[in-house]
Length: 78
Image (cartoon, rainbow, N blue to C red; front, side, top):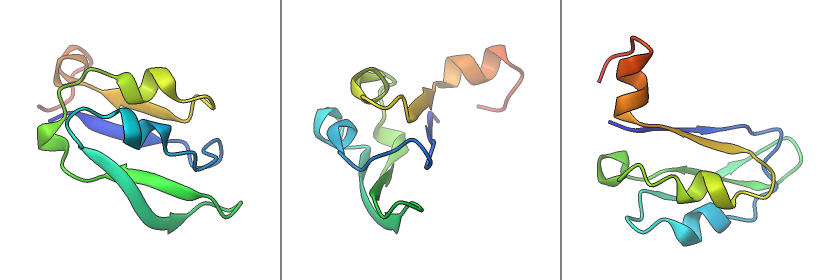
């Protein structure tokens, strides 16, 4: 399954990543970072297609997606 990584120190809570996810695999969480910004979180990563739109549109480079294929290449479990 694809994995979502959020750099909490970089995220400013704009949630553009949530808006662009075509599969609604991520959403707003109830967690805040140290600056008081709402963080995105995994909702249902089994729905994630690995399109990486969330990663591409993040203005703060705070989000990354590791696809099943990348995990396999790097010796991770799928």
